Image (cartoon, rainbow, N blue to C red; front, top):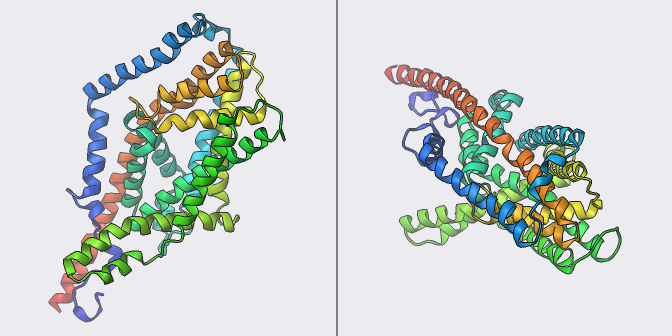
Length: 398
């Protein structure tokens, strides 16, 4: 506190290590930024990506006897592709809504976060994160690093930012798991129309139930687990190590609990839950429109189940966040449900082009805009820090 002449700077205006050059977060994003400027690496990844896509869309059709699969690309009914583009815009909007919804409840006494993380900045963060996810990392790690960095720069505390990123993932993939469970069980027990292969219905549903159970168990980790483990240590150095190690499960548990609170209080979590549901629904609508563009008719439950089964291949390392494995996984999923490969191949290819690759140029532009936005935030913080330092110096002089 300044009062009393102690010379201490209040915690809420102290510089955090997210703003100090050379900190871990600055280095992580610095590596990410260097990737955007490393054209040799981008070119290498691009050609590796072309090889993966060629294997899926050129070699695989020949192996299964569908040499003319790519020739059908020009046979699309264009109004349906326009509809797919419109649904994709809806997916972007829902993703921004999800991001903003996850931040509901974060302490913001002076309104700084509300002002900084408005619709414009939220769009920049989410679109830049999508580009980072698609270009540089499997399973979304690149996008998570960039989003976490942006939150820290906006003024969100380290642990709060990490916990909210966990909540973001939990909310997003809870909708994923719920859809797999509902559609898988409904198809398996004949409650809805559609083919019901065991490997595509009951087994994924049971796996999703197990994942949900594990997530709920994580929420039971005590909030002060780091303090408890540190208290058990006999030496100060050992206590610090224990606290650091325990901070990871403690932060994950905090994020899971935040996501659960959204489900328990729908009004409070409406933005997050609605954004997650809207994001997946819009993506599935893009795929549906692509099937319709090639004359395909897919039962709704089969469409949802096949989509999510294919998306599970996103965890497989690839040149660009699932490109190749997801394409092959989605094609295999719909083939397992008995859809004709002559329709599946072009429909999935166009879906991936619209939903996966179309956001990349927009995301690169958003990343450049985000860097300028963050620069403005940094100047504001530097001005406030200097003002407080001057007050402290004056108080000490007195």
